Structure formats: structure tokens, C-alpha cells
Amino acid sequence: MSAVEHQGVALGGLEAAELPVARTNRRRRPDMRTFGMKLVGIVLVVVLLVFMVGPLVWLMLRAFSGLWQFPQFLPSHWTLAWWRSVFDDKSLAHSIRLSFEFAPIVTIASACICLPAAYAFSRFNFPGRRVLLVSLFATNAFPKIGLYISMAGVFYSLNLMGTFLGVVIVQLIGTIVFMTWIPTAAFSAIPRSLEEAARDVGAGPLRVFFRVTFPLAAPGILVAMILSFLVAFDEAQGTFLVGIPNYITMPTEMYTLVLNYPEQAAAVFSILLAIPSVVLMSFARKHVMGGKLAEGFQIR
Amino acid sequence: MVLPPVAVVAVFIGFPVGAAIAYTLGKIGGPNSTVALLAQRQHVAHHGVTLGAYREVLGNTHVRGDLWATIWVTLVTVACVVLLSWSIALYLRLSNTWISRVVSALSVIPLFIPVVIASYAILTFYAATGFIKTLAYHVGWQSFPTLGYTLTAVVIGEIWVNVPFGVLMMSSGLNSVPNALIEAARDSGASLPRTVRSVLLPMNVIPTVIVATFTGIYVLGSFTVPYLTGPTAPNLMGVSMQQFFGSFNQPQQAEVMAMIVFVLAAGIGTIYVWANVRATKRASSTT
Image 1: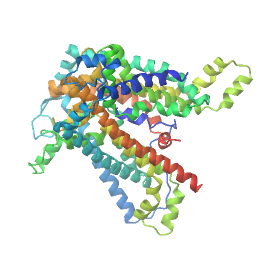
Image 2 (image 1 turned 180 degrees about the vertical axis):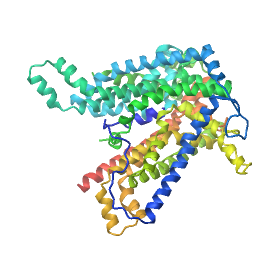
Image 3 (image 1 turned 45 degrees about the vertical axis):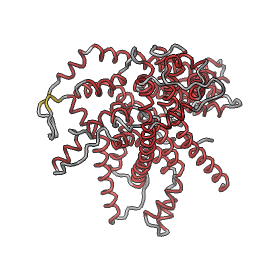
Image 4 (image 1 turned 120 degrees about the vertical axis):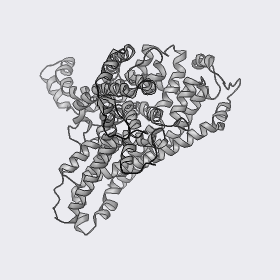
């Protein structure tokens, strides 16, 4: 489970709120405490810069380094040669292409499977609704690698090991919670009165859905699709287990790169692999950081 | 309409897990027949069930080492993530300056980075030629230990991956505490630590439990972080599971280890459900 995936589970609602920062207007007392708070803040910033950002910067520098000897803080010789060697490597290029094949297929499959269910979960109250909604969460309640090992055992019998379909299924599993829970919340957020009003002026059910319901839920669905795409794109451990040796996607290729290639090549590849995540997450950022986190997680 | 996702979960999670339970108990028929053909060192039950595979795996000293390593890394990671995300969220709750905005932006960076890359970045950062060693060298601490390929590096990696989730959860919990409540405590003379202890802490129990349980389950089921940053042995169960399955061709043993991890996760899950139930009860008794 990637960090993205971990996060997306928490999406109960679709508030477009920024990351919650206190909006308090406490009486300001110009004493030691404000200074203390500032100090704590600066310490936190330094710790986070070193701990969170440091490794990423260190890795990026490596992608451009020709010669970098311990104990220097920066490479003594810079080069772009590693980028060329990565783009020229056939197997690496192939894994990039594979990743961009799997992720869209998985996202679309997941949407086809889950979106109708999300609509039903939000609009119809049927017996067992809550149990079913929570049971989908089984995909995330199991420790991932244990689950993949169990799946792989049965995949042999189903002739899915090392097949395209097997990899799609493994990646699909991780997207199901997003594709149901987030769109369910999006559909539920649409007031029924809007749909009823449209029906009152003579629109048929299909027309109501496509002209009223769907456009209003579209942002939520889009976020679900972005997150699903990233889950599929970044999924490494399940694909590694099921896809090998026929289907080696970008993240799985990283395992080999780290072990068998020069460090700089792995660094270049890392940057390439991170681009889709950074770009797509930036689009979804506002929604991902919405405030309804805790509610989505509480069993009711 | 609801059927397709439920069916996918039932067929590709429920069914394999059920089959895996049967296989670990020595049942090699049905869905397990193909994997059983390929496997080595199987424990087969001709009548009833056998616990042979469990006995073998738990009797293996390497696996026991991995098990303890897993439990240790999980506990330390959970403690650190809870502590760190609590401090960051608390700071964000009490402060609203440009510094707090920088802190909140920095603390969610891992959400944007695939875990594979994060693990590799962390490995190089703490390696023998990494930034930390370089820094230690320049401040004259040349005997500073190399953390790459140790369980410490695994813990660092797991914390890195899990902190954003913790901060988002804790922040959302702390933000739901009304300002009036904090003001009231402060006005009646409570110090800041006292306010945190008596007002914010009790009102943020559920998010804390959620962060702890989800981090715990995540660490138990992780493979990428320990595989890339961890030592050869003992490492986390996720890594040895993969080795037993892929390299040693002993899927039954791998599935036994998966079951052990499931049991640990189920224990954690119980805490989560119990905390939720208790909170609901308390909420209904007070209102």
C-alpha cells in the first residue's frame, strides 16, 4: 500500500478545505510563549526538512552526478549521461510503457466495477448496505503482502500467475476502496431535491442522472480516478509477486535497479517514476487534504 | 449494482484467504492443487488437518527472528508515528503563522512520492556514503553508525511513509475540538500542557487509535520498505514471506507466515473496533 493509497482510505468526504491549520484568533499575549511556539515551529521545520525532504534531495542530486566522493556534500562532477543511458535501455523503456498501459486499464476497469455500486450505496437503502460497504474495506484491512501471498497461491490454479490479467487484478484490489467510498460520498453530497426538481419538470431518470447527478459528482469521481491511477501506477509488491517475469512495471523494475544498476541510473529512474505521482497528486491535493478524515474512519 | 465490487472482493480476497487457510492446514486439493504440485517441503493432511507447517515455521529460528523483528519494528514505528504526528498536529492546532503553514506542507510530502522511491531515497540518505554519515564526518563524529540496511532504517522508512496520514488524521481530530473549550480551560487558569492533557488529549482518542492501528497493519503488511532498506536477516515477515514463496519455492510456509501476520493484524483490528464501540457508547451515554 503506497502512501497515496493509505491516505485515500481516509477520504470520507470531499471538502475542498486546505490542510487544517488552526483558524483560531486567540488573544495574543506577547510573552515567552509566542517566542516558544516560534522556536518549536522552527525546530519542527528543520526536523522535517532533514527527515522528509533530505532523502529526496539527496537522491535527486545523485541523478546528475558524474563523480561524488565521500565525504563531500555535493558531487564534484555533474553530468546528464545517466539520463541518456536510462532512456536507451530497452528493458527500462519497456517497463515505462507497461506501467502506462496497466494503470489506465486498471483505473477504467475499477470505475466500471465500482461506480454503479457507489451510486447504489448512496441512493438506495437496502438491507446489508453498511455491512457490504465496510466489507469492501477488507481490501485494506489485511496486511498487503500476506494478502498477495494468499492470492498468488490460488492464482496458480486459475492460470493467472505471470499474466496480464493477473497483474490487473492485483492492482485492481487496491483501488476498490477509493472507487466506491469516495464516489459514494460524492453522490451522497448531492441533495435529492435537485434530482426531484429535474424530474418534476419532466426529465427522465437517465436524463436526470446525466444532466444533474453525474456533473455534480464528477469532481469526486475524478479524484477517485486519480487516486486509483496512482495506486495502480505505484503498486510494486503485488505486481512483483504475480507479474514476474513477464510483466515488470516501473515500480517493480526499481527493485532490480536498486540491486543491479549503478546508483545514478536508479536515481534517474526514481525521478521519472515520481513525476506522475507528483503531478496527479497536486491536482487532487485539495480534496485529499479535506477535513472529513476522522469521520470516514469511524464505524457507525 | 452493488454486486461487482463485492464479488471482486469475495473472489479475489475472501476465496484466496480461505484457500490459504486450508492449504496451511495441509489441504492440497481444489484451488490449492496447482501450487501444491510445485511446492517443496509440504505438510499434507490425508485426513483432517495437520499443524505440521505451523510447527515447522514457528520452530525455524530464522523465522522467529523475523517475527520478533516485525513486532519490534511495528511497535517502534507506531509509537514514533503517533508521537510525531501528535506533536505536529498539536502545533498546527495552536499556531497559525507562516511557520505552521510550512510545517503542514512539509509533513504531507510523502503522499506525493511512491513508496519504492521513498525507500530507495532513505537507503541512500542513511548509507555509508549518505548525507547523515557525511554530516557526522564533518562534525567530527566519524564512528557514527551506518544505518542503511539495518532495522533502524526500516523504522525510519516506515515512519516516513506513515507520518502524513497521521498528521492529517490528528489534525482533523484536533480541529473538531471547539476553540471555546480551549479558551475556557485557559481562562480558568489551566496552563498549556494542562489544557492539552485534560481537554485536547481526551477528545482526540479515536483519531489516535485509528492512526496507531492503521500504521500497525501497514507495517505488518509492508514489503517494499524492509526489502530495500532492511538487513538480510532478521528482516520483516513481509520480506521472508516473499523469499519463501519466490526463492525457496515453499509456498505453504509463506502462507503460514501470512496467516501469522493476519493474526497479529486481527489483534490490532480488535483494538480499533473496541475503541470505536467504546466511543459510541460513551457518546450515547453523555448525550
